Length: 564
Image (tube, rainbow, N blue to C red; front, side, top):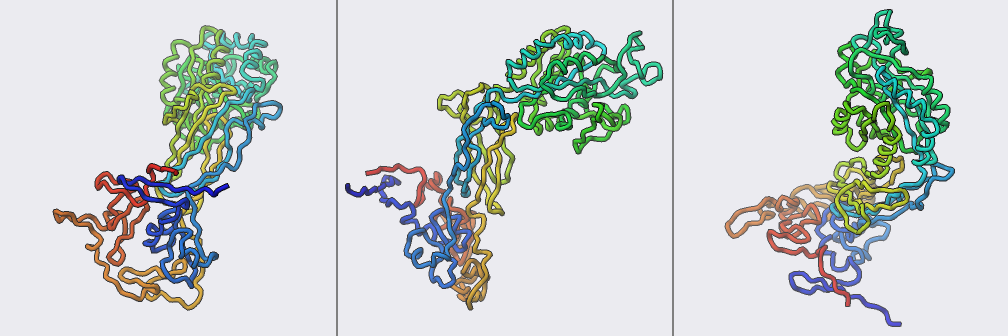
């Protein structure tokens, strides 16, 4: 069998240039003008730096060149190209006995070497698991006018079980209720009405409270119904309720109430009234913020210190819903439907608003509608790192058409949806590595990305100087002397003229450009371009193609390749 030779012809300006199968061949000219190790590594992945103190010559050169052979192999600062490796990829898994065994995002971990302004693409896939755990908190407005709705909830029994099992076999349900702050001006506090706020209308009801947690998460629906049956309505004085106080405590008291870590979390609010917002507490003298997210529910399920803190703002609620990866279903009576639709303009993806019929007869249907509206939506996001651009592209329909978006709304159990994530480093980092996580808005799984920043620094900077080599007008740097302005040579002993005008391009109209076109440094009257994007005597070309000058750089990225 004959050996295979590959010749690649690059077509640049209608000229054929032969490139050999070693991608670093003929690139030495790109490396040779770099004066420091860091500039060398940043120039091109083919460039390496020799910090061997006995080496003589230009210390930055292309891999595989004669200089590379002369440099002690133990004295070379290594360099790598932009690359990505999948380091963990477990198969998708539905929920069986172990709820922690579900796998809905793949791959789970990447290792990336990232170079400045060289984008890299990752492909990740989301597939909702069957029977993924659901934690549903039923939060009910139990003011006097909701009494018929409470009676409906007491009668649900087996129909509630049937509905939940249609959603998933792994469900837990909890129950709590809210009224309002039991102090003036929100509540009647005179002795006659404090213990029975319905006395003013000749009725009997429970003493007022802001939030009462009545049963932790359980899969025993019978126990849930028993707690509901023992509940009673109460009353407050004004038209607004303390529902946001209750909601925030449900979010703050996760472990105490029994939220599971790996579950889809929903809070259903059934109400016929609006809610007090931040600032309303000043009417009663309550101005403090619960900024540390304290759980203020005691062992009896009562929210304490309600007379100390103001009501939460929608901004605070939105942040907590996102942080806790919890969605909100609001089942509102018809006259309040548009009030909560306006609230949805703030909470956006975290809320579903449905119209609650008289006596809550359709409440289970609203649970279904809200649940499926959230499970059909997959939304990817990531934390921000300064100088790192992250763009998401989705093929929601599976037809190979990618759109710049991070959300799809047609997810189904068992159906795979593909995303591409493009990462590009736009600014050099002052550290060697980072960890980036890609997450989905409603599940706890994360994709870990180990980022290695190529060219952020050189390890040889930390090596001690050996031997008698001195730097007369400079400092020791990675085996070489880094000279002060106006000096050059192996030991910075040769004075040079640094004429800034020699680093400025002058056109036919005698108009002078910026020093090195504003893209590099003038060293001994010659331009040292600051990035591999810029080339030319005055760094005047922007690679791979500068439209303003119609020049093509020596190494083009987007070229025609012919393999013979």
